Amino acid sequence: MLHLRLALRQLWGDEGVDCSGIESDALAPTGIYFVSHGPTGHDFSYLRAGSAASRMDPAWLARGPAAILNTCRILHVSGISLAISPTACDTAFAAMHQTRSAGAQVSFDSNLRLKLWPLDRARACIQHAMALSDIFLPSLDDMTTLTGLTDPAAIVDWAHRGGARLVALKLGGDGALISDGQRQEHLPAHPVTVVDATGAGDCFCGNLLAHMAQGDTIFQAARHANAAAALSVQGFGAVAPLPRAEAVQALL
Image 1 (cartoon, one colour):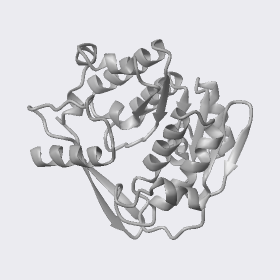
Image 2: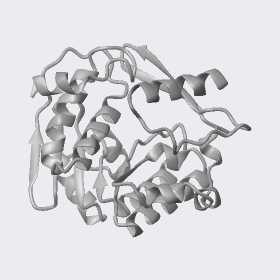
Image 3: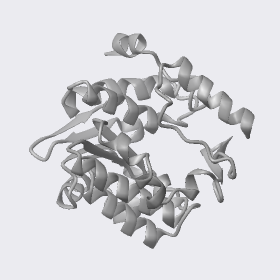
Image 4: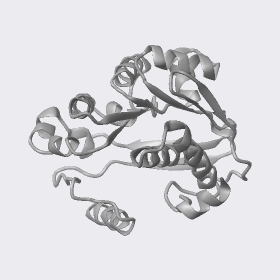
């Protein structure tokens, strides 16, 4: 696991990511997941129990990492962080409260993984996280499972009623539906040959938030995110196919 930690830090450093806020837990492994491919698409298996991230608790956050939240523009939280342990869930909620108190924005991706927790708890925790979020980035499949709704516009309205100010609903091969509570805009998917959709949603979220952090509206940012996600599905894996800004711009 030491080799994995070093490799990850090397990868992030090569991409210009500031790693000063990353902590390592010498007593726990890095959480990992495995992706297998079959006739119906990709399937995930998880090795997250007892991982370093699962050992997070609010007291750890208060001892130091909370200070970073006072300087960030956007905190992004994944539903997986809520699912891996009760203390990790509590820590995520504490971080969201801290960020809002500091005047920054909170982003949340539902990332529903029922292999990690039961549906009833997932529904309650995800709805609470959504209420704490300025920017909600769910997928259509997640929301249909959680709410029973299938119409994208109805799901977006449901999210706004639940407290989300801005919503970008990921529709897979149908693109994305973007809303600021006043208007909705559908962005059709770019026509590409899909090889592997692993990480496409994360690619979408990362690009959208990066552009919003630079001052773009959610509608402007989503156009870049939609193009980046389309390019990311043309190769295997969640990292290697991620496009550079030049490739995204060329597709727009």
